Image (cartoon, rainbow, N blue to C red):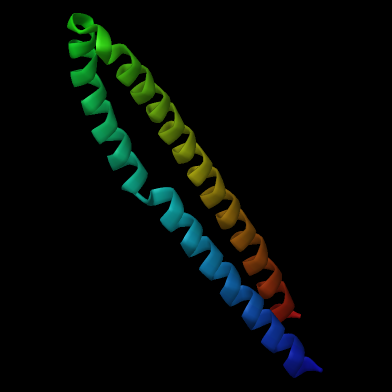
Length: 101
């Protein structure tokens, strides 16, 4: 019975450490920030053209909506990463507790 408990504790601890690592990768991932930076640079160029051309207003509105969507995507990804990290900490503590009994 002790062997099964030890195997379960090691498995839960290992999955917890993996969840912490994956959560940190999601939080520290830079692919979303790079996309937002590129879209922001294009948006400033388009806003200069929109003042002189009437046909650019819908394009500028679409770009603003896209920037808002990417910003929400970043916030969601950071939230998922934080939740995954906290879940991993809880699992690691549970696994450690199981192994220390």
